[in-house]
Picture 1 (spheres, helix red, strand yellow):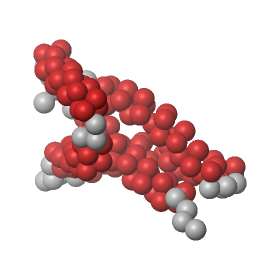
Picture 2 (cartoon, rainbow, N blue to C red):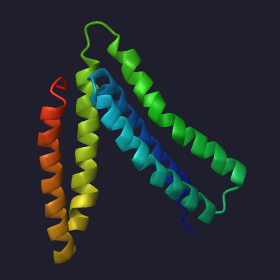
Picture 3 (cartoon, helix red, strand yellow):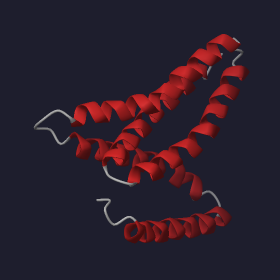
Length: 150
């Protein structure tokens, strides 16, 4: 019998740590931090619910679920603090490294997991293209609304 509880926790925890890198980078990049914070907050709620559902289905004890959820929740601030601390090291442009790492992991997820899902049906393809255009337009608008963000 295969179980997914530990695998789901580890995958989501590493993903949350990566989001913490994005948050830490965003906070150091001006007003971008609030946008990243809001995005992560809205994203973490369903992720936490999904993790709880998986762990309940795997018949983990409630105390274990609470401990794993606590560890999961701490990953985002931990990643943000790691970026803050590592950025203070002289001679290393860790902010650039953290931004590149965050962007790279999200591109990897979008290309390896989400893009194949988009191509499964004609209906989804149209909506995915429309969503892409909306995201592109939003990026252009934010460029002019938040001019101090690099």
